[in-house]
Length: 203
Ligand SMILES: Nc1nc2c(ncn2[C@@H]2O[C@H](COP(=O)(O)OP(=O)(O)OP(=O)(O)O)[C@@H](O)[C@H]2O)c(=O)[nH]1
Ligand SMILES: [Zn+2]
Image (cartoon, rainbow, N blue to C red; front, side, top):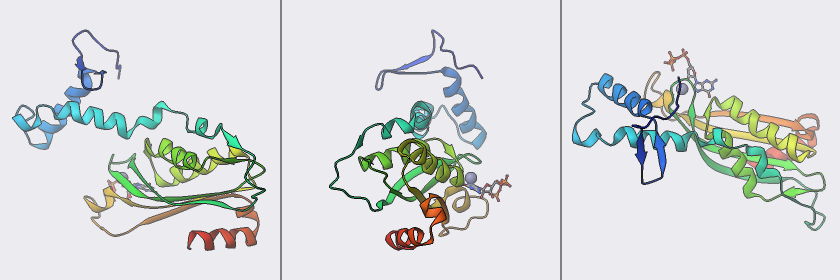
């Protein structure tokens, strides 16, 4: 599909974004196909809202999450133990049904000399979560990004999430969580490091 803009495309003054008319029409078609009337008052602005919402849900495609790890610090008082950012809430969407995935991630690493500003771990997570995902790939991508760019002794990412496609539709089984993990470096190879990590994470 070609998303080149045309003269008649909708210019949205509220956020100075141009939304291609093909996108707005796609939402109108979906609304009609779902059984509603896209021309009724409550739905007239819905295609524009949906387009903007999806730009936000998928804003991760416009960024390189690794850039958040560019700035590191050496002077942290000789600290050379595990750094853990625990229970970071996130939102994503599953690539199969475009349904929401909501959950929390815990991200840990064992620094090699340099540390990163702690918020950057959450930024990396959101950079990958704001794309269409399966939970396994989200977990692996976050871990690999930290591993490649910080070159620490070890990285661990554990994600626990609920999948909207299992609650609101399909098997309709609310209350279940999917848990995924990716361990790299010492957390994979050294039982002592792994034990310490899992205790810190509360597993
Ligand atoms: N492994 C994995 N599966 C996921 C994830 N998100 C959604 N799914 C699953 O993707 C599968 C897609 O299966 P399909 O049989 O192709 O689709 P479907 O007929 O809609 O399947 P049901 O959800 O069982 O109705 C489903 O089993 C979903 O539960 C994820 O992050 N990881
Ligand atoms: Zn799904």
